[in-house]
Image 1 (cartoon, rainbow, N blue to C red):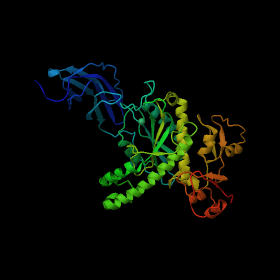
Image 2: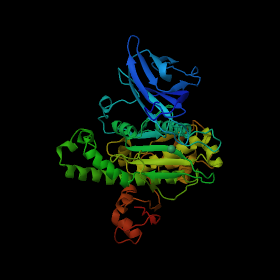
Image 3: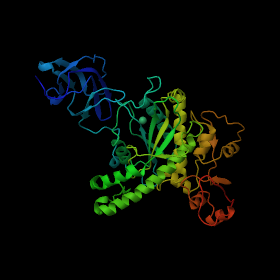
Image 4: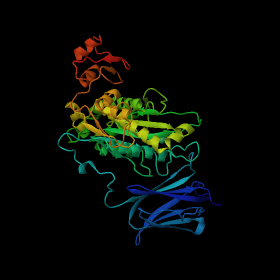
Length: 484
Ligand SMILES: [Zn+2]
């Protein structure tokens, strides 16, 4: 009688495969839990996986090895019902492996990651390779994190076919296009293909790229098909506090946490208490900024999506764990709701969603641009771009918002009587005129002095025009902006 191990006889039902910029992932779909052993052989390079009490049932002939170091996968039964799987390779790899228990979508799995050796992939250049420009007009960097990917499909649609990982990547790519078309912005894709990037790696990539904002794109699922609409989450204190403590205890990783691009402040030189306080201050700033950015995005999504909540939600989500980078997570709708899902899988709506995100991001940064950026420089000098060429997917009100204009102002400037515009049409912008408006609705996070500065009026005349004596203002309150 054999009592060794807890694994029952199992089958390999299928092998799935994804190529990421720095590794190749293989997922063995199993009918039960397995014991296995993995080792490498050289001359030629191979990875061998011996799986106890297991048989190959699936047909693995259809796998596409292009761009991967794998040239073939062979399998054979050995003594004692052991299954040997051999991966033939063109180069040495660093193999890592682990098993996963069943979840809603899949049964037991054995995951094998073959990390490339040799030169680092160009997909994520390090900061050292891309020094910030010296003229003080750097781009604002937006890290775009398309949710899920590879063997993690995310939510599955009401029809059993739409997969969240594809919807999030499509919207993220349109967002990347949008941001690329806007002067002063540089998008960075956290993933740009059908592969998985670990949750804790995503903010790390954003940090390496010196991102000014981290945007995670997702789509929801619920057991009832009635649930619908979009939700925006902002970096939460809970998660971030725990994250702070962890980072302070690992000072070596925290050295660039305090915005010390030039290394002027590093945590390693401080006591834990001081370091934690400094990081907490940075954290308080990021959380506040996350809320403000999220609110701008929420406002620009209003009208193209039903908003489940009229406020940005705060939740302890692992992907929003950067104490130093303002971070938001956008649930674009419910794939389990037929209405939401059919929209979210259409390219037109994906593009519309992406422009709403881009517009909200641009509005946020126009209001409080980071020092040293082109957007900050333009704003300080009262410069809007002189003209704008209409691109595919643009609409007039979106362009107006992007440059901080009202729709009627933009139409008047261009002698337009309708909202119809043509691709390639050149629109005049107000040039050197500072932005003028007669009224301003207060948004969450704004202060009276910021608003005064934005409209280039002095604080006391703004107070006077609105019969305000102190600095107390309320979200939603309409302020009169004095004309001089
Ligand atoms: Zn998701």
